Structure formats: C-alpha cells, structure tokens
Length: 166
Image 1: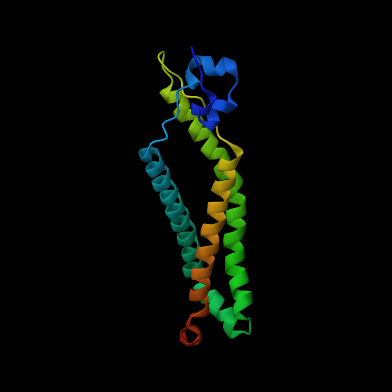
Image 2: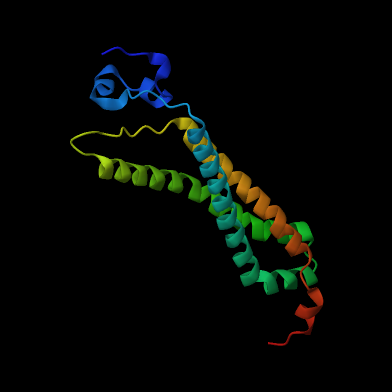
C-alpha cells in the first residue's frame, strides 16, 4: 500500500504507523464543501456560546436588578455595580471552561464508540489547539455579553427603586 504523507490530515499524521494501518490513512479531501462545513460549525459555535453567556448574564441582571439599583442609590458607582454582576458571570465562565472541555471529550469519545463497526474505526484525536480555540471563543463570547449587559446596568431605573414599597 503506497502512502503519501502530504495527503493525510494532521490528525492522521499524528497517529503512529500501527494506527494508520487500521484505517486512519484515508486521503484528505481538500474540497470546498469541507471548508464550508467548518466555517458553518465555527459560526454556529460562536453564536451558541454568545447566546448561552448573554442569557446567563441577562438572567443574573433580571434577578438582581432591584438590588443593584438599590446599591446604586446608596452611592455605589456604575463600575462597582458592574463588577458585582459581571464578576459572577466571569467566575462562572472560568469554572465552566475546564468542565466543558472534559464533557466535550467524553461526548466525543461516546460518539467515536458509537460509530465503531467491524468495517471501519474512527480515531479519537482532539488537538490541543481545539481546546484553545474553544476556550478563546467562550471568553470572547463572555466579553461581548458582558459589554452588552454593562450597558443595561448603566441604564437601571433608580427612580423606580426609590418609589417601590415592600
């Protein structure tokens, strides 16, 4: 069997010879369809990450909006109020990133086992760059969400808080 190492994917090149002989040395298709699928999946991942972080920040703001406005009336600055709210979102993000990577690896492992048959096997290869990009996308989505929620924090209705009786 003739091999051309230039036609292998980076994941297949990373595998040893023993693993390549078992079916991992399928030539890479550099077609345009593959590129379009990857671009679509990247955009979908970014939109999903933004939606989750923005929703979490908005829920936190709606749950604590009255308390944050009260603190604002008591003399806290906008930056201090934002720090309280967005600090919680940032803490949740930093805790969730490693957990999400572990869950993602587990899910990928389950999918690979589900596709395994007598005819072919799909190797589980997740490059370190994949985790880096995933974390970078999560952090960027959190930063954009924090910016948008910060604008809403700056516009809290302080008069309504003063008028409300409990």
